[in-house]
Length: 134
Image (cartoon, rainbow, N blue to C red; front, top):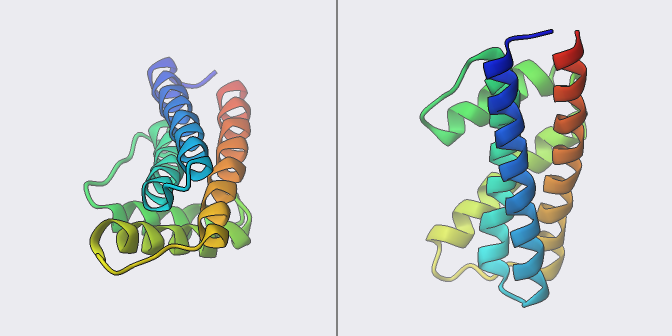
């Protein structure tokens, strides 16, 4: 069994990620695409940080979180490579949604953001369970 405090933090973060994903889905259904993109991205972000909790590592900047995750978890294929590109896209869409006043997200792009968040949440939750029983 691994360090209980790290596992508890990871579980807290994955629950928060799932909550953000649920919020993204509700916003998407109300056609609030900018906000849905933001919440879907944060779901992804909290999932990644759940993984980091078990490693007792964290970063202040989002780009550092994404870079470390891609280098240590995507490129090593702990998580599927296809997610790496979708996570980077999610970051770009979130930035555009939050900071580009002329950005108009499509239904398709927003739907993909939410699906990426859901998929990553499932994989991270499974990873946490496997990690905590080793």
